[in-house]
Image 1 (cartoon, rainbow, N blue to C red):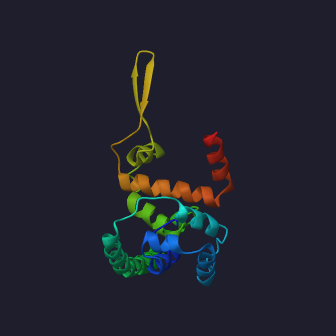
Image 2: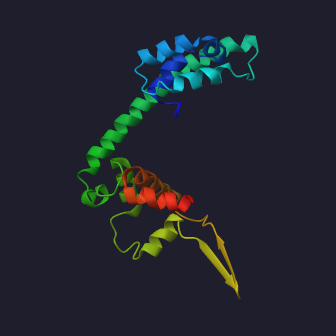
Length: 191
């Protein structure tokens, strides 16, 4: 599964709280389970089944019950945290709509949270970053260049606003999903 906090992951862990229990499920059991959950990626069920059948390190028998107890006690905690994070994200989205810069940042090919995050990191003081080079340097997306004679060395910029960098990375990632030009540019860079 792509993330631990996904609904399908948590339901799976409740049904199969140990690797041994998951491996004991038949392909038909898994198909039925995923169908009951409305899992849209049915093509993955065979892959999941085959992965569970692969040899792997197993916990000693006496620890299996302890691991099961731990997993079953953590699932509701993760579910609760996920729900609270979702509520907070919705609240941020609602509040951001009242922000004077909402229209500008919401025009970007990204979700409300990333737009709000970028607004928070860049701030409302237009003189803070007078040029795009200042923004790139602050975000760590501009490389560090050292020259000596004919030699030019280019390094990754480690010293920067890591939160701003992460916000721009999220924007870039989401742009690739939503914008044709960004997808094309990304494909060209990957060649």
